[in-house]
Amino acid sequence: FRISKRIEMAEMAEIFFNKVGVILFYIAVIIYLYGDLAIYTVAVPKSIANVSCITDLHDENNVTLCWKGVSHDTAYRIFVLIYVLCIGPFVFFNAQKTTLLQICSSLLRHTSFFIMVVIAVDRIAKHTQGVPKAQDVKPVVFEKIPDFIGVSVYCFMCQHSLPSFITPMKNQNRSTVVLFSALAACLGIYALVCYTATFSFSDLEDVYTLNFAHFGVVPIRYFLELYPVFCLTASYPIIGITLRNNLKTLFSKGEYPWIVDRIVFPLLTIIPPTIIGLCTENVEFLVSYTGAFSGAAIQYIIPACFVLIGRIRIKEVFGREASSVNKNHSIFSSNVWPVALLVWAACCMAFVLYYKISSAIQS
Image (tube, rainbow, N blue to C red):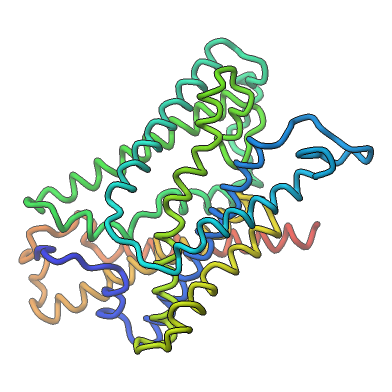
């Protein structure tokens, strides 16, 4: 019971699921990756437009302008097309040796998080204009709970990385402690950012870095506003190539003609997120849907099914003493936990779907 070989979720699906289950697995992953690329395609041009456009500029019809004669919406769509034309061609190739890119991206993330928390705390301490009073902050905004569920799932989406996280460990007996510590640290950072944001800004933008558009120190302001540009752009080719490969695997595991392999599938990867990006710039909307449905399937349903089926397979080999044979077994070794996870996922998805349909009917 030692993970000595790096194995991805797709390989686990091939082991545990039947043909229909494998197809459903790939569909869930593909929808999630499409949502990922759509979010990137919206968030990056939106950040660039926010930095590039002249603020407080309107025409005679009170339409917000970016530059003279060009509305903010038009400028945003121009940036979407420029962004896709610049970064999209990387999806036609393969990504190799991304370690340096991941290290730089991680440094940018940690630096940005630290700066945003410091600025927010400073605003709260100095009672800067725009800081809400404590009594005005609502403990719960019930109509936002469905979006909260989707965003939470999306933020903590890391199951696909856990196998490669555990494989290099020499002492895998401590894997539970290591994973718990890592996830607890993530939760602490997210909580810190959320709480400081809540008490620092009365109206929050769906891309949090845009709240610092009027920060006094210009270099820091531009760094935070362009943070999504750097980090998400670095991830776009990797996500795009992963999506392209999953599309190829879903339709066939054989060889494709060169034009289909090198042209058609990359275009199928790039075009749908681009169309979504041209139609909306609402990041919160995209994140909530991506997280609440395909994200919930990947984070809750698929891992729970892996666990339940895996335990059945282990009992077939080792009998009822399987848990005593496995020295690294989880503290959640009862089947109650994965079943509870499936029930929770179904409740979340049903609740979000009901709310979204009700909201659409009322509007």
